[in-house]
Image (cartoon, rainbow over all chains, first blue to last red; front, top):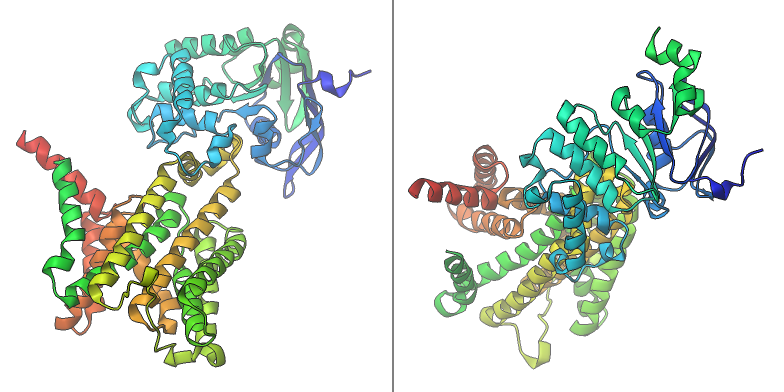
Length: 251
Length: 311
């Protein structure tokens, strides 16, 4: 028996997505408890990012259901999902490169506030937005760069801004798409500790190829291959599973 | 330095009535009207990333509504102005729903098509619009009993409206909503994921730009006391778009400089060169090659460079 839907932070039921004849998501069902740390692994082309795009609403599924804390969000536009407490980062850095770091984080805050519709006051008038943005930048160790444009900073720092925008929203469910991609060992350690410090009110679902780092952060693991869930469960069980070795780790 | 710039701008706006003859005062009025129009187009092009080739629709329709109401249907100027702006805004709301089904090139083509429909109507619906003859014999309004028939008094009137328009559009783009708009221009997908509704943000901006396009149309018809289908033509849309790009899209001074440039070329070059359009083309080519981001950003980065060298 499955628990009632409200007890899940995220529930994906029989999700299907095909691009023409190519099925990239086949009957995927996943449930994630509130506060859980879930790692999604699988070889290239397994459908991991597609699954994220379906959950965040960038793509529409052909069939199936997506529930966020019991609310059916399957066909909601992305911006409405954000207001239900869903936030995400991108595998390819998606920042506002002419704007300052502080403004980037401010946009994350603004997205969930009614002030985003105000046309009569300059953005600089909102002192609370600036304070909250700077606090988040401080948390990721980038406060000293707050006034610099994104185009001025290094790749590793951009990864942290990517994370800061999402964290500023205090999401209930956070999707991290390869937060460690392209980082040096030192930068990895920094971002790893940032992810580890995310409060338990936030459920974290993460796609990551760097198993050494990611497995430390994860409690549960889902293995995808060819758009299907191959193994799903507690971290150590999944890692020990023969099918995991076969598909992903190689024997 | 900043004060010098402000003093120069204030001087160039306030002095013409005292120093210049009627010809130049009228030219200054026309530049201000074109500047309001270019600024409203820049909300779409520069701040919204929505390149429109049909913005003359709002200028032309506002001008036609006011012209027809006052000349044919006996309306006073006040009522005609309100109806004309309301009508233009309603049209922008409707056109926005159609055009914003697409972005980029698709958006541009839809705005072009819609403006062509209106241009065709102005020509062919001659029972209402007088077709190619245009609507002539119009008058200027007399707000609070002050006649605007003299070039100087009309200039003051246009200047007041232009200053208000400039301030209102400046506040618009520097507001929290302006940040939403620029964010949607740069990263629409991310903005949607952050909780912004890209479509609605674009649509509101489209309607707001239509409103100021309508205001410039009213001033346009007051100035010329005449309206012809060319006011709705693609040429007038394209001229404004070129002005915005040449001056610097996405800046506040750029469209003003661009509009001034186009009008000065039109008035001066046409006196000496018959094919002044060709000369205008060469000037644009020069700007695009030398200052690809426009005259205003180009000159200000040049000034910054010179200062660094001189230090």
